[in-house]
Image 1 (cartoon, protein in one colour):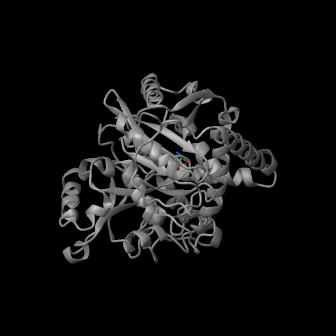
Image 2 (cartoon, rainbow, N blue to C red):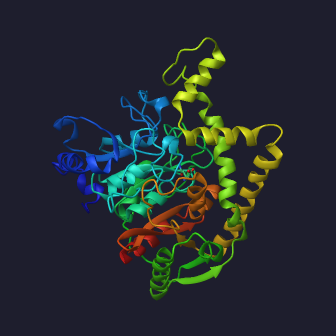
Image 3 (cartoon, rainbow, N blue to C red):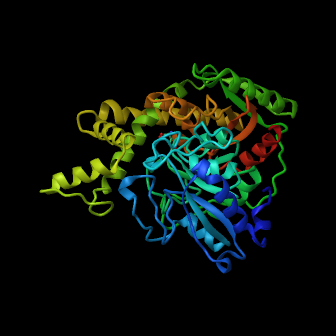
Length: 447
Ligand code: GLN
C-alpha cells in the first residue's frame, strides 16, 4: 500500500487488488457512490485513482451527492481528470460527499453517510469524507477532494491520512462543480506526503479553461527529504485558546510542536486577532457565492423536472425536491446577504474582514515560514451526534483562514487520541507549496 505512483504504473493487478478491497470493505464504509467497470486491457498499464463526486469524468455520472444531479452524465472531463488520464491514470470510482460539498461529515449527502474506517460508528469528516475513508482503508491509492473551507484537510485529519489544499490558482477548477468559486480548490488526499507531491506534479498547472489559474514555475517533481531545521513557525494563540478544542487533540498537537522544536524548528506563539472572525466571514461569503452558483440548477437545464402549471412553480418545485436542507439553508442565507437591503451590512463587511484577515496572515507569514494549528478541534464525532449546523460550522475555524487568503495548507497525521486520528495543519505563504510539503513530510514521521 505504500507504493509511489510512479512505481504503480507498471504494476500488474493494481486494479483487481483495489476492486477486491472495495468489494470486501465498502459495504461497511460506504465511501463510494459508484465503482466503475473497466476491462483488464484498459487498466493494464495504468494506476487507479478516485474522484470526489463533484469532479467531472466524461461518460460517468457526477451527482454532487444531490438529488438534483442524480442522473447527470458528465459531458466532459475536468482538467484534473484529463491530466490524470493522460499520465496513465484510470478512474476507479466516485466518492461520497456532503451535498454540493456543503458540510463536514457526509451526513448531508442525499444518498447515505460514509463511515470512518477507524470506528464505523463515526463520521469520516467532510465534505470529502468518501475520498478520505477510501484512502484510509486502502480502497484506492489516492483520491482527489475539493476544499472550500477545509473539506480536504478536515476529513484527512479525521481519517488519519494526508490532505493538501494547494495555493489558490495552482490547480484548475474546470470541471469541478462550483460551490464558492473564490475559495474552491481541488487537492490530493493521500497516504503519505510524497504521494501528495506526486499527484500535484500531475494535476497542477496553468489552464486556459480556468482564468484563475496561474502560470507558476513551481515543480512538484521532487523527492521529499523532510527537513525542518531552522524553519520559523508560528502558533496563533487564538487558535489554541479556542473553547471547542478537545484536551486530547490539544495534547497531541503540543507533543508534535515539541518534537518539531527538538528537530531544530523555531516555534513562537503569536496573535492573529482577525481569526476570531474567520467562521463568520466564511459563512457569509461561501453561501453568497453558492446561492449564485447554484442558480443554474432549475430542473430544466439540470435535474428531474416535476409537474407544474407555470414557470415559477416549475422552478421552485424542481429546486424544492432537488435540494436538501443544508443546501437550501445556504441558498437562503446567501440570497439574503446579497440582497440590496443587506449587501452593505453583511456581504460587503465580510469582504472587508476577508481582506483584513488576508493582510494579517500575510504579515505573520513574512516573518514566519508556517502557521501551525490542529486541523480540527475535535476527533471524528459519532454519526448523528451533532445535529445543529452551527456546531459543525464552528469546527471549521482552523481550516478556513487558508481558503479566505488563498494560502497553501496541509493536514498531516500526528499521534492519535484514544485510537482516533488527529492532524496537524501547516499553512504557508502563497506559492510556498513545495516548502510546505517538505516540512509536512518530516512531521508525518511522528505518527
Ligand atoms: N465545512 C465547510 C462547509 O460546510 C467546508 C466545506 C468545503 O470545504 N467544501 O462549508
